[in-house]
Image (cartoon, rainbow, N blue to C red; front, side):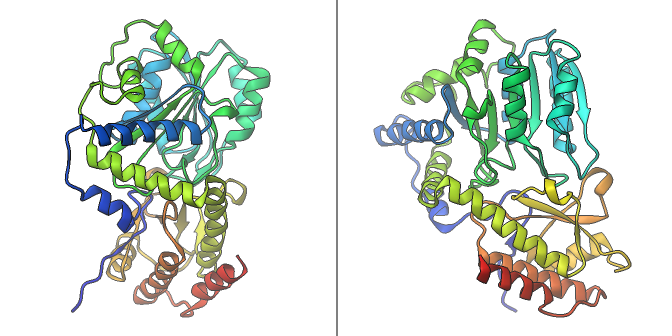
Length: 385
């Protein structure tokens, strides 16, 4: 039996295309190599420019969680208040990080599958003095996208003194956001909508975020201190921690692909393909966890059809046999459905293969669907696209 690679459809890591893989396979050079220094410097400058950042862009070895902690550590200090806005598991992760920092933490929670409104955020911020606010743009536990642009607009008018920290791990490069909306810290990682393998944390800091860090003096954290990394980002011939050479090249190639497509078109493509993909899954009886107006363009949580008899572990195991790797749900959604990513460099062919595998897995597990029903909706959507 010929084994074929499974389609990697979890909400990250996402599929890594050949040209990016080739960069990872290059012969490693010294981090002081002149050509590598030029590549690294150019990458940092392009990230800063593309996301319209008036401060600094950082790229360092680490995960999205490290970037999350880096964001909080550099713009808040013990004793200050922070408002955590959460609509899922990863929004809640801010609570522990901020509590460990010694911050006064208040939480605005939305029911899973929904999100909070700018008016609700405004009301909470009006209750006391806050140094910062956290917003998770897209939470991978719920497939919900927060109204980030509207929140930014509200903050400019109502609370311009509050620093805005945005978790864009499952959004940056796939869901629209720009630093000049009024975002002070935006962070992500390499393996989501950028379509690169895991290993890099990326963070953008506004000019006033950089000033806040500088005014704080020495902070307890060392590895991800802005002040340690700013000299390196401006001149990578300087040293503070060994850069992951091949991963920097991989991200450089990933960014080249993004620029070739164009960020505006990339955002538009994610929205179009997400809608078509969801429609195909709905044709098979699945429902999304996120309400229609709050659906993320980068991933979806699909609940099993009522009365289908589908068992979560058995179905996802069969789906893997049919060639698609999915992710289980978290928290209160566990066992009710599964998570599929549709971000980064995933194309039409991958989505066709995914829906076909879902149809086969349904039938194999005893849930009778009409073969080709979901595929027909998908193909019709692509033709109209």
